[in-house]
Image 1: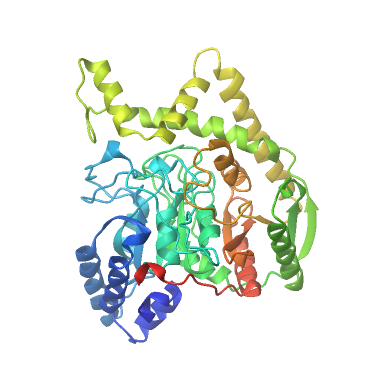
Image 2 (image 1 turned 90 degrees about the horizontal axis):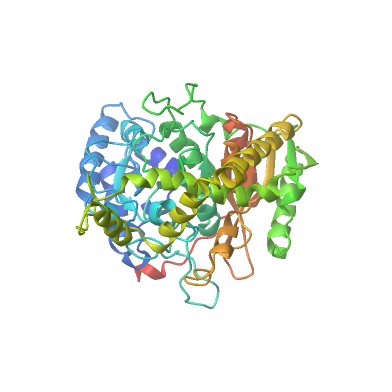
Length: 492
């Protein structure tokens, strides 16, 4: 593997600025790495010609002294972001062949900042999953393996393709979306950094919708600083998105260098769940010690409605999905299976186009929104959501950020939990609350379990206070000193 693919995004930018290598050389190294990594199944399609053309433009700008924030940076784009003229399928058969005539705001911002696109990455179908096993193009494989085992592991989901690509050195960074933990959990599973900003910080326009009030676009990177640079470019006010926040984007990279001395860090007691592996608890203790050594005050806090978060999430998210995915009927775009009449065409198209997990969630969503059940389920779940948001509002009056584990375990094997949806849903137990509350959160790789697999710690901050999140995350990253990388078995 080329040394250029081992660089962080920040290191690559510095190398380009100092003329150690060109943007074309950088992108060629990553294209070569992608071509040798078919075993990971991380990409649904690659765009080498586009990446090289963008790199040549970047070299011209660098030579002219006009380099932008992400000039020449090769990135992987989750197949949920619409890309002009390039197939966007949400890893679903129902959108196979769909080439949007427009660009999502987030990816347009990345290209405007000088980034280059290596291709589209696989994901759980319509972002519904926690393991990247529900994609129509097959499971994505994590570059990590347990010590002494060749069993294929999941990279987490739903942004597993981007996480796998970044962890394997196929891209300097990747985009993801986080509806219940779909950036942070894959980051924890693959030893990468994943960030979900405040709801509305990044535009959802041009991002295929799953659950509109919960969807958060965000970056996956090799370091906290890399994610800060990417989020700086991705975030913007967008009048095309009615939920976009008209606020200034701070200098997230500068925040990574801030001292955290004197900050109060909350430790929520509700995150000590039954059956949590001792390794997770030990890492959490180490994280608290690292922040204390950095000058923080650790405070025990309570988020009393946390235990209701998963049930509320798995009512609200499927309900919104059942509405959003009603548009896929075979009439205007994507797959169409002709039936005996209009109703039969709808039924045949949706039965053939959607996979089992999507069908399961659409049925749940339709049920909880149906007459006679709306008040009992959906309305009640929304009331619980408001209580959860209230818990965060109250806690953040006395602390600056929260520290929790990211996931209740390390990565598991392909097929290990696929037959038990409830067990699979429990992977989101530490992450869904931040989505329900709309507050920023990030996962930082902080250690390995007994089988040599990555584990992550999560930092949660108040709404629109990502700078605190990045400062704390950078301090954790420095203290943890996580440098482990998977052996490149896929490139042999």
